[in-house]
Length: 349
Image 1: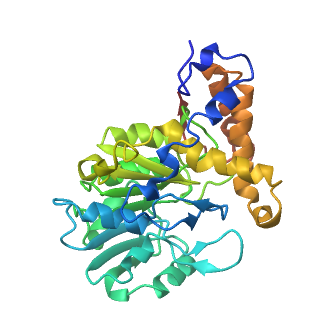
Image 2 (image 1 turned 60 degrees about the horizontal axis):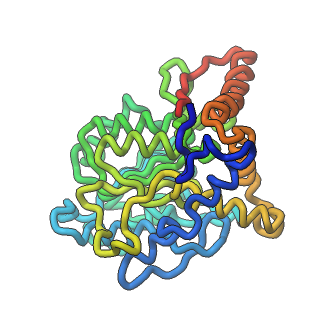
């Protein structure tokens, strides 16, 4: 049986037409212009591709959320950032401040937990921040350690303004453990494994037998559809996808209802993926990945992998799933041939 993966029933589209139908599904929707949902509208900024975007920034989003009565921000900005090392642009060897960490600047009352196993990277990040506001831990974070780490920062059970997770590993298992520890962040920022387009729900899982750390080159992270389904159960709605980073807002403090009907409603996972990743990919492809795009080889590979999966599926959800299994299965085989332990991963529709 076919699964709806665009507003049209792709099971009824001609073979090979899925990519065209899917990729036009959300073009021009409000999900590509969340920065226009606020008054005054946010200034146009640049995405990872250095393309102009009207997506709402984290700083403006937190301001809008915390402006709501009962948002739980009376204690000031409180955040936890797992994978908090310095933020490098892909276009030059210049260190810039992680947009989540930058929330600590210019705020009188703030507290933050920053965790990154790379001590050198973490030092660079902390150097730009007020030391009195930061607990910085140069260590790994796992589903087993996160409760203790939050407690050491005085944030266990606190109404976090923002939680960010970008560890290139078992990100969604860490997210689940963080929520299970009793925290309900108002805003959650997650790196999405965009190589798996909706409706594919992919997640790499924590395994004590496998060394912690980045799993790039192996099955890693979790897809946007997996994040969306998981967080929906905890009362979160999807705001948008900003190239690789998905942004989710606690439903009870969703601040954009005044923007209806022209915008302000949560994005569907297909709309967010199209507006935040697929369309920027196509713009870079049309430019031949030349100029500044030449330094985006990793992102280009993700763009082309996603497009390849959609083309090979021929309008069938089952074929999409079969095609998507090939890469993580091949990565596991290479690790097994090296004698390495394999971490479990999930891939379903």
